[in-house]
Amino acid sequence: MPPENQTSKRWFMAYTVLARRYRSQRFEDIAGQDAISHTIKNAILSERVAHAYLFCGTRGVGKTTMARVLAKALNCQSVDAPTTDPCCECESCVAINSGDDIDVIEIDGASNNGVENIRDLRQNAMYRPARGRYKIYIIDEIHMLSTGAFNALLKILEEPPAHVKFIFATTEPNKVLPTIQSRCQRFDFRSIDPQTIQQQVKMVLESEGIGCEDDFAVALSRLANGSMRDALSLLDQVLSTGEKNLTLEVLENTLGEPGRAEISRMTELMGDSDAPEVLKVCDELLKKGMSPEQVTDSLIDSFRDLMITASAGAKNSLIVQTAAEAEQTERIAAKFDIASLVYAVTTLERMRGAVKKSDNPRAILEAALIRLTLSEHFINVQTLARQMAGGGGGKKNSAMQGKPAGARKPSLKKAFAEKSSAGEKLEEAENVRCENLEELKARWEDVVRETAKVNMSLGANLSNAEPESFENGNLVLLAKTGITGRLLQAKAQDAEKVFSKILGASVAVKVKQQETSGEPANKPKGAKSSLKDQKQAMKDPGVQKILNTFNAQIIGISRPKNQ
Ligand SMILES: [Zn+2]
Image 1 (cartoon, rainbow, N blue to C red):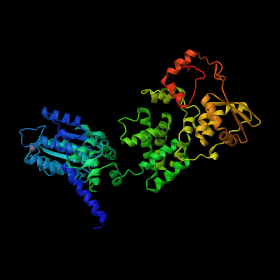
Image 2: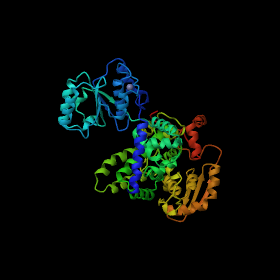
Image 3: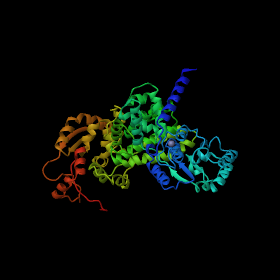
Image 4: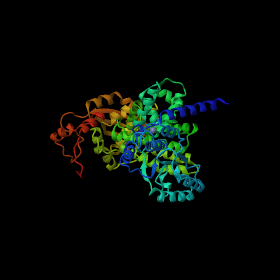
């Protein structure tokens, strides 16, 4: 036998052992389905057990386990009547546990889906149970039955013998005939939340005498995606390596999450507006064997995490991530405003269908990546102030209401964000043609942005200055604060180089400092701002943060028209 087969066989055997050893035996042990356990126990206590149940839910959430516990509860021989606490030791309980009791018949609906199978069942059901109180049929994947089989089943459901109980399980309830559904009591099993899976994983490992890091349990619960059976199966694969102390590293080495690191890096590069690198990482992922559709799905998940982090903060229970991952998500989320994260999620979701149908899915994916990398939304000032003040709650809404003024223009915030690719290249700056002072003033924001592409700190300083005069290649800058003046003075030569590129002609730069006494010279006309108003505004934590972050000062105060 080739070694791969031996390995997979060993895994398979380990899985069988673990799954058996840790299958829940009692209602109380079934993780994550407390409400259903509670209702069924009440039905047993009040002697109102239905004659047919329909258990719905994705795989590995406890449907079969619940069915077996219910069967034991109905047929346990250690008591005279159905009980909420089966002994798990009598002949019936033991046989039901191993799935070979004569009165509890488990049928796989996928392989026994013909009308003749159900006819056999009907004939067999007429006979009284051999040992227990009830004859119990557990039919898994009931939605796989043929129409003929469903109709045959319907006949016995219409007039079931008193000694017969049915428990149907399905992952696709919408495919079960409504006439069948209406004769069953239906329970919808929910996906098991990551915290419950983590607890169970830790419990299992503790009884196995194996240590585990918190991060290991977190990452495993994310991989299990709401399925306890998948969690245990994955755990078996990890245990098959023989590790006695399970760390995040062990998990990544054994199971890995394909492309997780690259996807995260991709979102970061998008935040940096670095289209060439984004395409490069995408190429790496496709070469690794991920399909364009998988890349799209992973990106949607990743942007969803960023969106949640941006709206609900880094510490929230809505995202399953380790402490280090949470830190990284927070850092990347800071590169976007909420509106653009919402835009990214919706754009990718819309594009998903196109990728799936297209003959050239890669081109569609790449087009979307470039679109998302190059398009951004300006965040409006009110929203920024609110966000910086740390105001929760309405943050997301306010971001959505704020009109993205000048969408598709790279924002200053983004231009100032640190670039991961160390590319301080003059070539990156685009030409901004200005013939005279008026034009330069009008396009000053563009000049600052292009400067920031080449020299981040110079751009930041320039945003706190403005051109005072510009003729014959001589530019005089007016710095708004003393510190900006000194900084710009020191960088005058750098500024000359960059401006010569941006303005397309040789430029000499002089720096002047604004007079400190009195009102700022460039106070906008009509903006009424008394000293009292300014003091009031300075008290606002959001305003304070903006002033500090951008090294800004208040030059005028005006109130939004609609407030
Ligand atoms: Zn028993």
